Structure formats: structure tokens, C-alpha cells
Image (cartoon, rainbow, N blue to C red; front, side):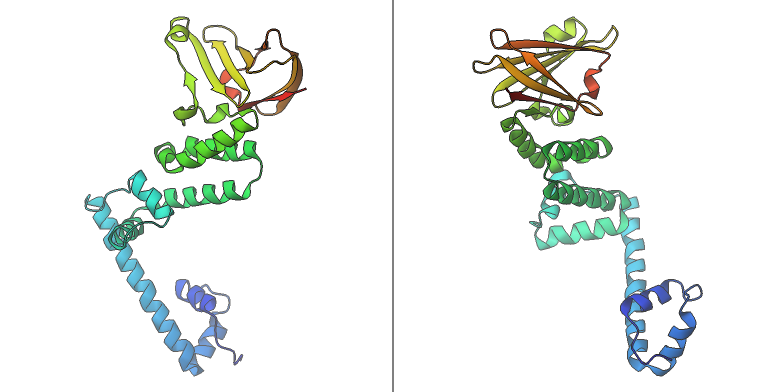
Length: 261
């Protein structure tokens, strides 16, 4: 029999499944002779019991409508750790009984961690776009991160079309004129270019991309990304160029990057 005390992880595993634990016999033998581990086991058991009771109470409060779902502005303060003590207590009580809000918090924290540690702008954009797709009600919580990313991308001549739908601050679209002509119209500006996209809705998918250079330019490399990147060299006439992409849905275009040659 080992004379070393049991770890908290061993005690926790034993409490969760005392009959299924592979080490249960050794643990029980140790507990027979170790007052310290027995005391720690009792404390941990009391804590877990309290959490279960607290969780049931919190769940009942949510069901009865006495503990409301966390609003976006409140969740943003919680994520940023700027809540006061009373607000923080309300949030903790709520998420103890609400798996939906708890999952939202985990998803937001995961996203923020990922975009902080991802150097590529286009990958950051993809992560934010995927979050917006799966958590549309929580878009306002990460709006500032999307704004900062969009500005940084525009400075590098990348138009992030994949976040134009959920984050309308970055997007000009559905103009009255395009609506009359039954077209999907989108427009973004970068530091040195204006990029417009038009697709007739009633015909075979063909996207027309118009690019206007804000200063004199003859040629540029244009990269269009859907599932993969496609690059081509284009010539500008009077600082303007048109690219027609047959079979390409406007919805599938993630971003367009323009590089001077």
C-alpha cells in the first residue's frame, strides 16, 4: 500500500464513480489509514453536494423566469471582468442553472483566445464569421473585435466580405437600385481601393467584381477567396477594372485582396 496521500484528482474521480474507478480498492485501503485524505474527501464531497443543490436551485430560478438570460452588454462586461460584485453574483447564479448562457460564455472566450493567438487576418475573419453563424444572438459581444479586424484588413487592402452580413457596420448593400434590378449588391472600401460585387439573382450564378483604385494604377494582383484562393493579374483603365466570375456565387466569396504591381 502506498504511503503517499491521494491527489485531489484521485479523490474527485473516486467520488464521481466509487464503484467504477480502476483504483478504487487501493484508494479505499489508503483511506482506512489516512485521516488527512478522509478529511479532504469529506470536504470535497460536501462541496460537490452543495454545488449540485445550488445548481438545482439555479435551474429552477431559470425555469420560473426569476433568473433571466444574460443580456449582451452584461455578458460583455462579464467577459471583460468589469462587472460589479452584485452583477457578477447574478451572472454566476444564472449560469449555474442555464447551460445556454454558459455555453455562450465558453464560445465567446474561446473565440477571443483564438483570434488573439492567430496571426493571419483572413483566419481571424473566418473564426469570427463562424462564430456569427452559430451564435447570431451574441454577435454584439464581439462586435468591437470584428471592427478592429476589419480596419486592420482594410489597411492591408483586404476586403473581408464574409463578415459583411452579421456585421453591417462594414457593409454597403441591397441598395434601392440593385433591389429594383433583382441583384445582390455589396461594396467595401480598403485603404486604396473601392470594391463592388453584383450578382443577378434570377440567372445562373455569375459575380461581377468592380475595383476602383483611389490613386493612379495600371496593374494589380487580385486574390479572390472562396473555399480556396484564386489570383490573377488585372489591368486598370482610368483606375478601374472589371472581373467576371462565371459559376461563382457572391455568397461564397470570403474576401478579396488587391495588391499593387
